Length: 452
Image (cartoon, rainbow, N blue to C red; front, side, top):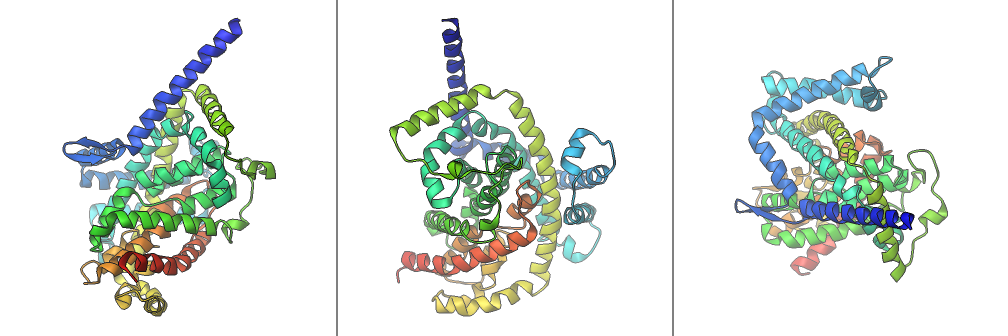
């Protein structure tokens, strides 16, 4: 009898934790709240206010200091008997990572103190990259702390269990991947990557699943759609762009998981264990699946301790610091190439006849933009902004660029520094594959929207 009572109290406690933290997480991440006449989700309000209080000059100094600290920690991590935290995050730094850390520290000092080549000191290049780094850092740290409410108190298990039948059949992924996609959509791609990386390290996803999720579902944030459509002159089609972009991203994700390099990734978890065929077998929808989801959620909520928030904050701060170095180094290099060399234009040459064949207007002007998203999410729309292209051409470019997912000023940097087993070569191949698939698919959707 005593055992039953104890179990009842334990169940009630788990239910309260599940409901309180899940409701808070949903409101904080997904429900718009009007503050000062501006309607945004509370997360974005908090991040924007923090950035406003700090200001840009201080933000630049902070990311410069972060890049210097990351470089210092990466050097310290090579020595024996380092502190556990340094050893965990900085002891196995490869050559590519080291180069990025060195360049980030150098570039950061150059931009803050105004010394160095004009191409790096150009505000469109240097200041822009440091601003992106600051914004990404804030987004990762704030979201990384509060996302614990969504991931550790049962909501992930609840939704994952219910959506498992659909996700397994269509995308060969666990149902929990749906939460990752939503996190990217309302926060930022880098936050979605961080969530996926943490779940991979927690043996929730296999190597193949983590790569598929992070390269297929790291959507641009909701706010980015408004910004990009405004730049491209097609803001009247804002909601249609979001709908088309998400639809095509899901279609491409279902294809990409079935072809190399993603299909060649291992069905192994982070700890080295192999996923069984039974674990990959999709469940069928039934009344029992909701009962199972409920019990799985309560079990997770009951076992989670408050220390989960401290752990999440620590890992998100370190992850955010390392991503800052990638953003500064790779973003500056890519933006120099885009603004001071004809590289982007060269890549657009073979795409122009394809766009003309697909009857996309202003093909000559927008062709370079078809590949430019690899550098930065906003670059394709920036390249055609003010060029006098038709609304249809602007619509095409915004939908295409938002579906390409891999942007080296944000999401790709986070992918490279995460635990997810994906390298630079993988990202190049996956980006090109997605682009080849999307160019005709986006053309079909564009013609449907604007009338054949």
